[in-house]
Figure 1: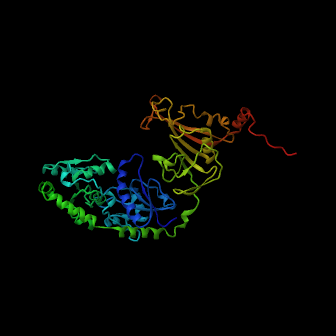
Figure 2: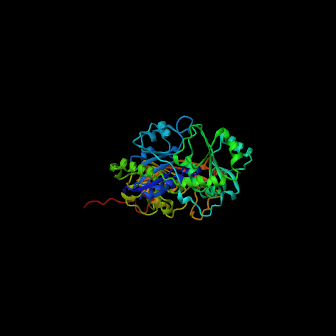
Length: 486
């Protein structure tokens, strides 16, 4: 592993839009680490075996069994401790037992972190966000922009601003990236106020606005405690004075000039030394972790990757754009054991009769040689190992809407892999159907009349003597004849 190869992993449960908010902070980490000469990548849910992984969003769930195989530093951006965010005990244990990067030392007390393993960093000016076409503050159409989660506390402050004669535009929650940034550039100011009573300053949000060239007016309490680069860059206002401030300042002739001075002050700050220290600490921590380089024999396989990538499983796909752990076509004959090399998973070996579970989610309707794929899966599974399959139901409205579909499925689609196993060339083992359910368009259990999908659970089993006799009677070659010695 290169000591300067860094991977920034954003954890995002399927369809969980708020996780997109971590892109802002991950890009800032990438910018700083690249300034330090590191080779940096960003990925969704994927850890890299050949890099130090800085993991964002682990509070949504992280499989701690991955830490012995992957070099992981966890980036905590949650407000923790009394009156802060509610997180799981598992997340706090993960932070307490792992290298951590945090933005506020008060968080460290909440998880009992060791000072030797926790690096403190802050966010500052991001020059890559500066836009040449940003309009003058005086000419922007939006008075005040607010974005973020809404609660009663925030709503009350926004109502005070409107009562002061300023029009507030609230960006619908769930808009991130360039679309949100465009709205920020259209605002004379962004208002920042605290969600939690812990009142930690939301620097992970504010640095983005200031770097985009938009002033920030922020509530300040005794607990706010901003980093130095924000002290002279933000318009600060006490909670009880929010309405008076906006009535007096926002539409004054001096506001735009003051705002430009604050934006310039923010651009003069640099926090590279903090990221250099964090990177150095991570490199020292993992310098002797050579045990991570062993060959992995996965016991859980996920056929298909893309948005359904499953951390901790070996994710296989035939498309590079799905970013699987390994590019592998199970529709082709597979020689076992198979040694595979992967930047994400490291060295991997697939062996016959070694896998506990295989999950194939909306894959079988796409593949060309389904018999070969099912044969490979049967060989890989341990005896009594299971395969969970989700496929379109043939009578569903969307069964054939995808142009890459080559088949749909019904109740009889599994007969050849279970009862008539000899037709697909099997003899000593076969599948049995453990369960078969119908799913609606939202993947909830339903009746056959309303089915969009089928979920089938198969289990590998050894054929009985009676089944093998039947197979010999049905096969063209008696399923093999022993070579008798002369």
